[in-house]
Image (cartoon, rainbow, N blue to C red; front, side, top):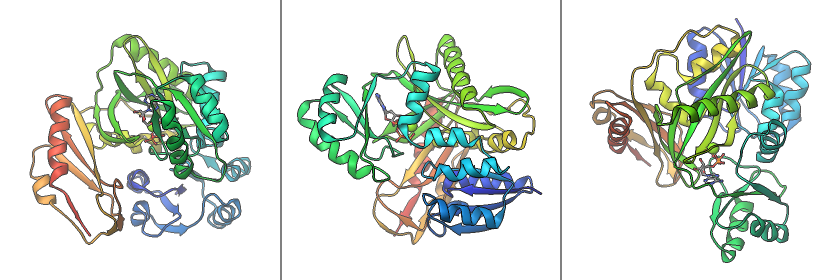
Amino acid sequence: MKKIMLLGSGELGKEFVISAKRLGLTVVAVDKYKDAPAMQVSDAYYIVNMLDKKSLDKVIAKEKPDIIVPEIEAIRTEALLYWEKKGIQISPCAKAVDLTMNRDKIRDFAAKKVKVRTANYLYANSYEEFVINAKRIGFPNVVKPVMSSSGKGQSIVRKSSDLKAAWKFAVTGMRGDKEKVIIEEFIQFESEITLLTIRQKNKKTLFVEPIGHRQEKGDYRESWIPAKIAKPHLAKAKLMAKKITDALGGYGIFGVEFFLTKNEVIFSELSPRPHDTGMVTLISQDLNEFDLHLRAILGIPIRPIKYYGPSSSVAILGTKKGKVKSISGLQNALSIQETDVRVFGKKETWPNRRMAVALARGKNTETAVKIAKNAAQKIKIRI
Ligand SMILES: Nc1ncnc2c1ncn2[C@@H]1O[C@H](COP(=O)(O)OP(=O)(O)OP(=O)(O)O)[C@@H](O)[C@H]1O
Ligand SMILES: [Mg+2]
């Protein structure tokens, strides 16, 4: 049986491990802290600083996995490029993981190499350069550290006097030690979608129905399926997603994010792995995004997906900082028709930390979101 090493053991990793265990694979979960969600269901686990090549090399050399599945961005990708050359399969491939580790590489790749429409953007490596380039992009604009995820360090700059605070916020919210931000034109979008795109070995690229989502502070709050999108826009998004994922290569699922304006489809960013907004697939269909990722990685041909109707997922967030004593309200939440809940099992909580997700189906996506929100409100995290 094949052995998978999962790099990053959060809630998405946990569901991936469950999918892998269902097919009888061995999974070794890795993260920088103990009791991470995926470690609770894996065969073995390691606590490793994945930004350190030596530590990463050591655990890979010891475990000799057949496949390495990255679940997070903060990984020393040189290690993956090295082990791929040595014959370990990296999902989807080391190049895709390397290019998406930081925002600048994937943005330049999409805008300049693949030439898809993105928001106009410039970078800044110092506060002085930031002030000049933010003015060149114009106001409002969106500032993000090139090394960050889940909205960390991200803010909207509406006027010159916001610049100082935005720079400070970006520099404190970033990962790594190189101060670099991206300044993006603010897109006044009507909606945004994630298009889960699956690259398969010797088979054609597949797409999950588009997922709509709402973000707050750069992090997702609700997602639903199917998103409302005009047919020509969906066709365009599929074409763009295929172009980018073909240029990246490898096998697996990609979460490709787009902004939709009245007349345009604008590429935003992409994850070479399951996407947080894709947790809605845990209730909307028979093959969820984790099953799809696994099958594509293993080279198992993917049969047509069966959809169960309009569905939604609502993130349940921590409100206070502390050790989790109990999570209550499951009886009430799960008594509601067509709902489900996933509790991630995180031992510590803090404001806005994603702790669980409520899932629901409804007669349309608006109803599904309403039902999931209602279920989410019944779940209480006690510290
Ligand atoms: N240029 C932009 N114009 C308007 N809104 C934007 C822009 N860039 C980002 N946003 C908003 O912020 C959200 C998060 O941005 P982005 O996906 O780039 O950050 P992230 O930190 O990678 O988030 P995640 O890890 O949750 O995907 C977007 O989904 C969108 O709602
Ligand atoms: Mg995003």
